[in-house]
Image (cartoon, rainbow, N blue to C red; front, side, top):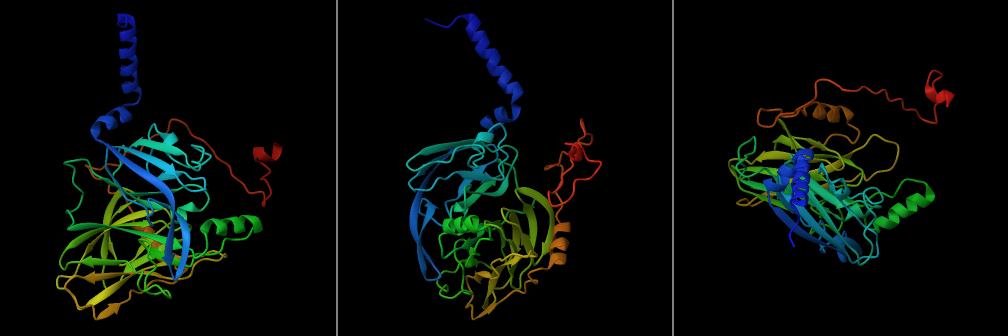
Length: 385
């Protein structure tokens, strides 16, 4: 027996109201395709710095697999846990319009995924394109559970710069000889700072500047006279990093999946969880040399930190690589260098990629914050609470 006209009309009106109420979602769902991924959370024995340990990974890979989509695509990720740890996955930088429950922080938007349980993340990428990443969002599992999330522009929408010869993702991370979960548990029990990592990594490899690590070196092979788009991601737990390539300059074109006004530099500052895209134009003639890519922390605090340098190597495919050049990085506490770099970051704000900032405020709020280590201001409402 068919539905009555009244019921059909009610369904139609409800569907139309959903389209009117949530236009971003309605448009996004029809703008792209649905991409399916499966994450098997499993233990894997991994060796670095002559230390082998069992660590939590996605699909047995460190770093984890890459997710690729286009602006407007729907992404569906089925996560299956085969480990004793609770876990959840956060899609770092995705705006999650009308899908906040898919954001991933444990105990905030969801209960963690337990052993032998499955959880499906379902979200649409709306109004974003560029380099982002995903990582575990509980305890310190993100030390090994992370990977890139690359969002290409919609079809027939070009970059606001010339198409590069090739695109390469470089994930900066950390390696702990110890179990990273044991490190944070000890810190929470003692109240002190956590033990620092043993190395910084390029795509999971510490590089040749550490003992017992020459064979665990990431190498970027390039051709002379070409332009490469390097998608840099700082997946280190807490450290801001300087990044440089010996004898090369590059052009910054995007930060945190937002196009910026291009500027040329030989040094990059990238904070934890941040992404930066750079255009690297290689030398017109292949030199008989290779070039270190270095990452070292910027730190001005009083606590401990990993004061070492991770390295990858840029090699020209037709070169003999008889000599390896090393870039000069600023001092650990070079705040002026960081400030100068940060001042150059400006949104592209072009006609194709505008920045729609509200010019007037509907409501104004006054927020007053204070620390218990300081006396409450006498005129504050808090002093009369």
